[in-house]
Length: 548
Image: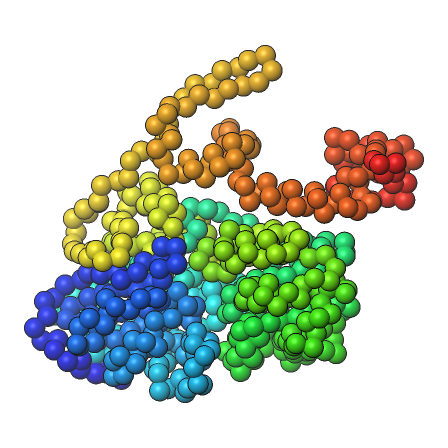
């Protein structure tokens, strides 16, 4: 596959990165890296390709697409149309999923658009330049990319994670740290979506989501879930098909919009999925099935007028269509919105706000992370041990949190690139650490009063960008972590979620609405729960209403 790109002889030998988009908010990811004489694009998720289309020559010698999510791939079609001979490389699965980004276009053959690369095998693309793909987790086909440039003096290595997850998801195995040991890249470009945040174990996240959906259905509510067309929706459908709380349940699960088309594409790729998924699919359909409960079907116009007559679940990538067509009017509904960054929708998105204004509906968020958390991000870094680290894909605040970690500052050269600003990546034995961010620790005073304790902090803490989130509602939660007291701001989202949950419970005969429920315990001597701590949604045969 070795090729000779045009006009490389006169380019200076260097190692650098020029970002066109670094994944802040919705700007997408597109990074130009230069390794010796070669210019290479890592992803093209830009909405506006003008910076790449200005020159009459292609903006790079090749493009590598890490995976098929829009914020990494949506600009590829326009770039291909402008420069048809510019090679685009990706994994085979990503090549099959890419067309989902352009559903309005006629189906096209993957080989006419994208050249696929095998897993794990170094491929020489140009003279002295090789590429090697590693499974990154996150999404079927997602790849971490190792680029190696050979000179007479040494080999220069750059490792780009794309979006990654070390945890095994339902439909894709996580990135294997063991498979990367010994790579020793000079430069690591890594996503930092969640900053330093630590998540519960993946299986705990799945358990909490299934429990919440089960509670909603048991209380007579239908559930609507806005999800991206690719990835999260298919993960949730697989969970619903296999989780013990839903297996065999008399329940309709409807899939609307482009999410259904992505499910069809997944079914064409079954041999590429983990063996556990392939074995599951041997015994029952992975998605569409009207015979085995729960029934999983496409939403058709015929069913829209009857949705909600009995509790059901709807997954869609276009919640505005639900609002415009006005068919979620029967029964009571709860909307569960992913809290993930950059993918899916949040409670604050315009589409959700508009929908809530048109319908009396409870909205809650849930965590089913497809990206690595802060703990796994630092674990991967310490296993790769690069000289330079560039953090991309995440809010500036979350990325700043990562560069503020002393365990990283003391060992690596850290960079927070921004669009349009060149980052030079000199290599050598001398460690040159960029200036560290301003200190983030604040000294204060503790005063014990008769009925309360006050903590006084200096006003400079208000200048820290974290303060806006911490002081969002003026409410805080304190807990012990060993000998340290940890303070955490309570967000509006949490208050809204608690309020919605309590409002739902208030409509039911349950412990929260029982006159014997006080201090989280049951005080009815006739109840088998007498004296025990009980959950607000509990119930027993001697229930007595507060409204008596």
